[in-house]
Image (cartoon, rainbow, N blue to C red; front, side):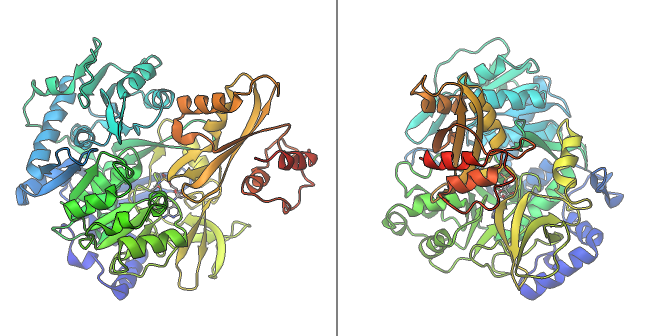
Length: 633
Ligand code: 7RM
């Protein structure tokens, strides 16, 4: 274990004591945690911050390279230990075990490929790859040489990819000829080709051969395996300042433009690893599996960095939960004797729809800890997970956090603090949540709903939005000066447990994907016959939320294919995940006098409410509500 025993609470009392220490003496506490790592030069000050600017600096003037902590240190102590288990899409294909020593060599070799292709410290590299080990290798190779990785989920469309490449002026793109997903192969390379028609910043592309598609590459494109022929596996780790950027990861916002959250080297290293150890109660020989994609923050922090920093064995799965059948997750748990299993409520709800026989036929006795992330988990899903997967003997950690927070913020700690169904429960050490009432005053009493805020900085808070610090300040630090505002509502019970109630802004979580409504509306509005649109979420028993689009057309009678055409536009500009379940043509949208769409009303209509809309007299056009209700689908 990389942490001193005194930093790892073993029971509720120790958690309470350590938590109190962490918030009364945060600098001493985090300094002790940071001592657990290999620094090339120690920090001179633990924390400097200013909520007004806003500016946060952790482990100031400390020098390090995160890959030395992920790799070199474990190669020294335990070279043969498995770092990554790769489980391919098809159950019959070969599983791969990559030891720390092998991973170190792969990362160093590929870091040399990056250098040979003129990537330097501070350059941005876009990574658009499916869930194969090379994705983890690429991420770490960037970190090795101080290049800033920007991983884009390989389910995003060419338009979404191009926007992200351009926003960060990425110099290089790492991709593959294609990917395997269930019984399909996906032609990733042509998505990249299309994106690159709109990107002038990209000098070169390196292509991993996965599906043997036999494509020919252009002049500035190279095959991954051929590039590896030109290098050795010796690569010095670049010396990074604690505050140097480690990566950019995009998340949706309430305007059309995605926000490139920037994370730094030192604070992110300390927080992602410390939370991994405590939340999942990871022990030395455990096999840990997080089913997320590395294209999301969950994959960054809890497939790659958190586990590797702890010297853990982390499983990467290329495929989908439904192929070859809905028992695939459990088959993998049995096959690899998985000890910690971390997934999303949407996956649980989808699997719970299928016969429980698909779970019961596998031996899940290796499981010790279950986790959920991404959205609130409803009681039925929690019960199903607990009874059928955990056999009522595994603690379930419901982990609340965000791309912006870098690591888990509110959760129970497996085998230490108690879980409570539908509650994320208690703050992580060092995290000070508060609830605000409608007057933006801190709520002191319990059993209340409020808006969630965080009172004090923590090491892995995103440092800025890439290229737009003003927006960073506006979105996260303006609503409640002196606090971080995550955009979620919460309820706090008598014991101080938090239940996250959902977004309070215009982001909808569909199947665990954080979708901004604004960019999807922008896509709908691109249709020639669309005048205006409004998109809201409504509860859905599998996806958590689904999307409902209300659209005003120029000419109602022209095309019967409007629904299909809008869906195609959305799939092309954002990705298929953003397609609404329902698209209703309306004559008008409920608006305030200042012209703002009253989404509150649309949300109610979408979720089936017929009468109780509260006060609609402030609307410019109250009559429109009835007409939308009459046409509801
Ligand atoms: C890790 C991740 C962040 C948003 C967040 C919430 C929602 C995440 C939970 C949750 C209830 C949870 N990052 N959310 N975890 N809601 N309970 N345990 O998902 O940036 O993609 O999304 O997700 O609304 O603000 S994210």
